[in-house]
Image (cartoon, rainbow, N blue to C red; front, top):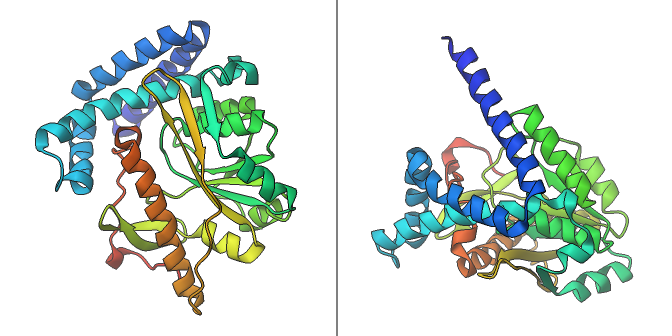
Length: 306
């Protein structure tokens, strides 16, 4: 069997599994869905050894000086379980109303967004792949905030279509990461919210800043957009509590540092935002995506922002 055929069969299996699992999860009770996804998370620890080893390596980079190998292993298990837990409500978005969501989600800091938007300014929301970030976006959109989110296309167009349908059901608008910067500038000319995640090593304009003590290639788009448009930079994150309730925390506007050099401004402010994001992750370390190759790109491999 040729490699392309194997890949197609694998992708078809993954899509079929995801498609029918989504349908099933939307039909059953929320509590049952959590139980199922917790079990899947625990099983995955044993079924995906490559991912498990990758997570151990990354958690060791971040916490190796303060955690034992046994503690790191426990964090990997809990992280996989939490990935399942945090997927539940995102998958179930089409069956939720705002009234439903507010039974299991609380938020603090909405007045920060209200005040900025009332002054006619746009907002670039800064977050990462922490907790149920899709649920956080849907909640803001359901509350009536004009929200756009920047996201990458998935490798399988069918899975990408499912993701876009889910986001549409949540009431927020997806902007392709591969799209035009002009579109983002147009959005920020009006008092809109633009959500951007800056915790991934991706092939976009970026620079190297410290993330858990190690240089990591980080997108500079939010800082550049804020400098060009005057948009406010507002950090926020969501996490899941032990009682299966989400909590969104919105922080005060980040003040851009001015160094007198455009390039230094970008680097220093990207570092400032990354440090804030790192602190979020430290608050709930097992609710971040530790399988991601955050430190994959090295400085000698790529030209950074000039």
